[in-house]
Length: 299
Image (cartoon, rainbow, N blue to C red; front, top):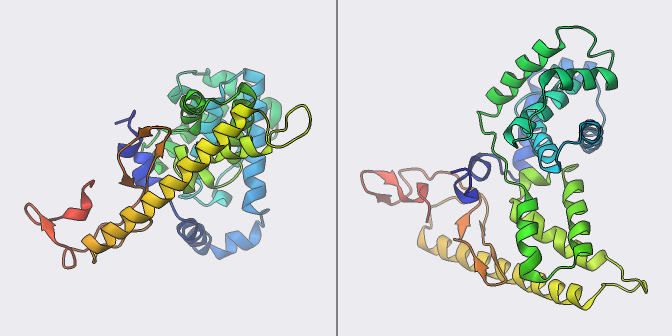
């Protein structure tokens, strides 16, 4: 279901650990060592910053919504976990990811407009009438490599919901929004759920924002919001550890890839579920029904 993060393809297929990400990228480079040696690249974090800047440049010229810019950056990160970057033209991928993200976020841009803007920024890569066809071809390439998993849940919605719950000032929300914007320059969208990112951005905003006198943190509303957010994170961590311990005792043979993520804040609780898990071997696990591992269903 698109509206339910816990049932989404993002939670099931596109959350990884740092070790898993490193292993996937190392595997891609190991497939063709000669290619890697022939085309040395900057560090990945520098490439992520570059992608973020280029997408924001195009988005500013075309006045594209921030949600679509964020989705495009997630598409790029997902795509390059499946495809070695040296086998592609990153500028084509940037333009195509943004074009596809605009369609998914219901703010579509005409493909010829995207091609014209790309020609403005990168004239050596976009200089013929076949650019439109290349973008269209690259679009199908992205969709195929992402297994048609195109719906992306972002932290912005959680931030908007929690503004009223935590009594956040508009200045705090603006700063947290900026923190969320900047986190797309890192691997965090592939490592943590969007609500965890939103809570962390709120904490940073409340801690870092100065009041007019220069003191930290800011207003009384900020202090109360900081206390509420801190208490929520502490409670979530405690409940996650308790549930992980319960699961370890209940299913001793089950190999959980990471502890459950619990979202419990300001009186609002969602169903505790695991963020990612590996299916258990049938010869190690108790079964439910006709031979299906019980840990393969949501608890």
